[in-house]
Amino acid sequence: MNGAESLLETLGHNGIEVCFANPGTSEMHFVAALDRQPHVRGVLGLFEGIVTGAADGYSRMLDKPAATLLHLGPGAANGLSALHNALRARASIVNIIGDHAGYHRGLDAPLTSDIEGALRPFSNWVRTSPSANSIAADAADAIGYSLPGRISSLILPADTAWNDADEYHGPPTAVVPTPDPTDPAVVDAAAARLKDAGRRTAILLGGRALRTEQLEAAAQVAAATGASVLAETFAPRAERGAGRPTVTKIPYPVEPSVELLKNFDAFILVDAKPPVAFFAYPDKPSVLTQPGSTFFPLSPIGADSLTALEALREAIGAGSNGHDLAEAAGSGSLFPSVRAELAPAPKPDGTITPAKLAAWLSGPIPENAIVLDESITTGRDFYAQTATSAPHDYLGGTGGSIGWALPVGVGAAVANPDRKVIVLESDGSGMYTPQALWTYAREQLDVVVVIFANRKYQILRNEMSNVGVPDFGPKAQSLLDIGSPDIDWVSLAKGMGVPATRVETIEDLDRDFAAGLADSGPRLIEVAV
Figure (spheres, rainbow, N blue to C red):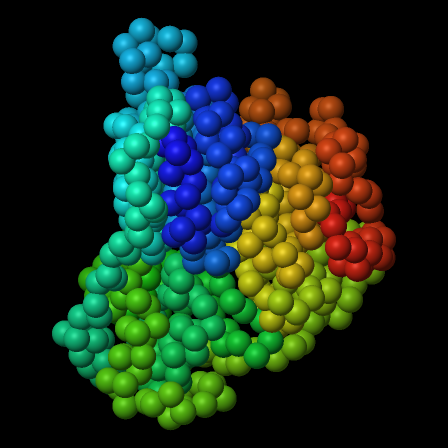
């Protein structure tokens, strides 16, 4: 057995079932080894940003790592934008990056680069495997360290892959670190605050704390104490919709965020950080909370948020059945968390506008769907309008690197082949990673893509005003305009094997969306906005 084969066997032994790949010459022995490892599925992406983004989506849905296969420093660099988002999403990923053979590196061949240096800002763990005999143990370390919610990057020199692993005697088992325990002192302090001033206290949920069990526990605490439950602006995955507790999300713009958060002078952080502005703006605050606010780190990033919330619920004397969420409306909460009822907005008709789109979207989301929202300005009301849609998972941007939704949709669909995936994508962001459409078709993934084509970077037009430049001339406007020439998403999708249509009315959108839900493969709808 060579080093690559021992690596693949170790990945399969430790539960890695998928490798999203864009390989090159240095990784050919790894590619060949896939045929001898039945437990690992290879999924090809035509660009490394598709590969790393897909691994992010896979991990968000299954809370387990996928592997990626990347080609030396430049190939890894192509995937760093999506890795940045994955890092912020607290995804579990095991990157395998090929490198030159050890004896070849000193020759300064064209693809030579500092791969470790490039990967460190986008990884929690980086290592270069020194020999074929060490690669299995190194892979087990990478897998263990990726759980829960971290990114490992293992660099595989070509000779490490092709040399015999003559000391290999079977795949080692990864050792998963134990999450930090809940601090009883923080639980007691947070409970004391809630009992004394619950109405001025917010329970801020982020990361994996926006799952149903954690939402239930947080909402019960709020119902008992008058606290409010908030969600981070950029959450990797929220379980929401009818039958689940509602949560108020902190807005993206500075002004409404400050207006919301001024109602509170204490925050109980659950897999979340104190909220700050996305960017610095002239004459606007970077810290969104009021001066002197108190923070209780109930569950640090990556810790067991459910156990922490259950401990808090117990500390305030509200057992799991002690407070029904129906009581929340009368509990004194400024922003009550109540159980959502299925209540889609009345279906609009006629010409498409952003407001009509939001009202329409509240109705057709099927139960148990996975919704990925990178609709940017067109979809500013989507999140609020879908709170009472059928139960679904809602995946959002995390790190601010755009073009994430199409590749993350690949991973979400591979992870959950029995669930309908809906990608809400803006045309400007979508053009960063359109190659994902090819993988949708190649793997026949059950994805409906809705492209909102306003043919401009409208978010940047808005940001011009936010940074104090309300008027700008034709040269500046030309850099924010993507409508000359118009991008033909229908032709682009069909060229990559995805059936596609263009619609200009709500009635046509509703018809084509229903057809996409009825099919089992990919489909794209371009919406003229």
